[in-house]
Length: 235
Ligand SMILES: O=P(O)(O)O[C@H]1O[C@H](CO)[C@@H](O)[C@H]1O
Ligand SMILES: O=c1cc[nH]c(=O)[nH]1
Image 1 (cartoon, rainbow, N blue to C red):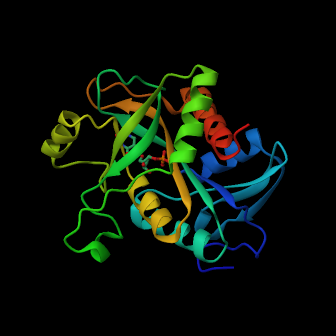
Image 2 (cartoon, protein in one colour; image 1 turned 90 degrees about the horizontal axis):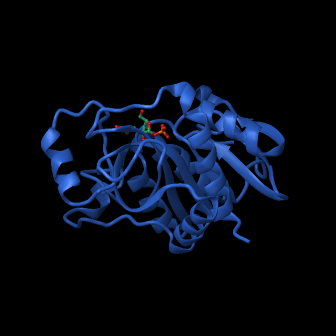
């Protein structure tokens, strides 16, 4: 049991899926896992452990933003031994070829600053995905026929952005989408020698202003969870 995760040793699997939304964790656990048990509810941050095709998997909320994710991922790695961490999140599309409900596999995650920035001092560290997970996720997405884009994303600290010029530079440099956690996830995985990937579903488009209604998201979120599970356990 840690400060933020009320689980016992052994309650958490080596493979952890991390949605920002704790209720997405509940939904994904109920739809994809068998023999599910809730292993955390501290501060309402829900976590569940169960089986997917015989493999033990934990699905745990990370909260919104890198400071929140940093707390859970530090504890999952350092106290519970998580080895493979896959974010399953929503994002805003930044390129015209990326459509609503498309999946983005984040090869890199650019950020202005993360909870880890201070330790890098003047270095602009480049957080990147684990290659084995990225390749397996791309294979799984292709096999399912899900429209998928692989490339760089932007991990922002703000949802309500007062600096539109930043987004303009991201768009100009080919960044596929914006979310709020992957850069810190990738950095922590690198620090502790773990595997990490962000599999994202496009919930809105910054260029067109389109947005999915919450009730319409389930099917596309299913694809994202399925791809993440196949990436963790290929073959
Ligand atoms: O849908 P989730 O996984 O929460 O991800 C995105 O949604 C939240 C903002 O609404 C941020 O956490 C952002 O990264
Ligand atoms: O962080 C996020 C998530 C979804 N859509 C956005 O525009 N930003």
